[in-house]
Image (cartoon, rainbow, N blue to C red; front, side, top):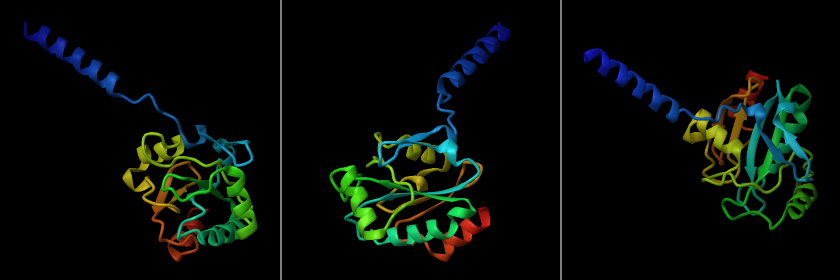
Length: 181
């Protein structure tokens, strides 16, 4: 009888284990996002690169950080840094459509690093990149405001995250980028 109970409990434990296991085993490089021009940005194309993902907005007090993002891109792109701007209206501070965002970024900041379409970055409707970051790094990966930064290392893991008020060209971010490049 004791043996039957142990066998039954073992079967039940393994049943719960299987049902509780996530089916989401995607790596960062399995993800894709639509570019601002309608192209598909396949993150597998960024393998062995360092990626700084930043949720951006045109009407935010931090919008001037676009200048710093462009400076980072210009300085480090040949060394393996990708700056990926993700325009978002999750905080109600973005333009109405992608063409307005693109024009705003190009005209005001001469942006030529990759930009995505306007994308949700928080909550249940967040893009899978942001859900993946949260699942793999924790709550600090969830954008609390515009210009939140997620740094991905060459292995496709979240290296660190930075709050909106941390400038892209701060010593904190530049030192980390140089360390992992």
